[in-house]
Amino acid sequence: MNQDMPPLDPHPLSEYVAWAGSRNREPILGVLKEKLPKDPERILEMASGSGMHINYFAPHFSHLHFQPSDRDIEVFDNIKKLTSERGNNNIADPVHLDLTKPETWFNPGPEKSFAAIFCINIFQVAPISIADGMMKCAEHLLKDDGFLLIYGPFRVHGEFSTDSNKEFDATLRSAGIEEWGLKDIADLKQAAANHGMELKEQIEMPSNNFSLIFGRIAQ
Image (cartoon, rainbow, N blue to C red):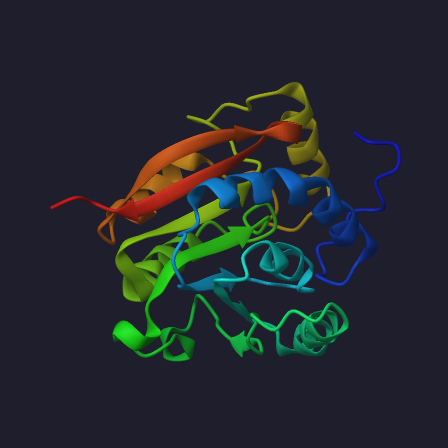
């Protein structure tokens, strides 16, 4: 583990989350530059947290319109503060979106469709059960050719890809919180299949993370 890592704290405004976000933002930006559309489109971030990622990415895509969202409305002021400070005029005000409550999702329709959705570092501290809501929400909101990108550390077929991921999992579980720990990509694939989605691409990332690209199952 990195000696400079602050104490583990999943709160979106914590020092730990800020530290983790600053480490992973450049590799994720590289994937987004390759995958995001070249034409004007709307992009949704689930679980935006402090807003650090969406505010870092948005200036690189002036033709795109970004929509932050989160379950916890307490983070909204911080998201808007970052957006204002950085002059990011292609980021909308954050909206309440709880993956366990479909009534908080957007109304369907072309005007509410998104070309892409991304979600960063949520599953190591969230129950795998929210994967079903995430895939159902993506099915509901994505354009036919849109994609969902999920970034984070995961197990692969029940195994840890590296010793450091095994150590990270043990650190998470030592907190004694039931849902904390690395989830398996297979469980995300199953949730996706339940909602007409499939894993299109599995990209290995620095620090033993993955970018998982899901899209609609081809008819």
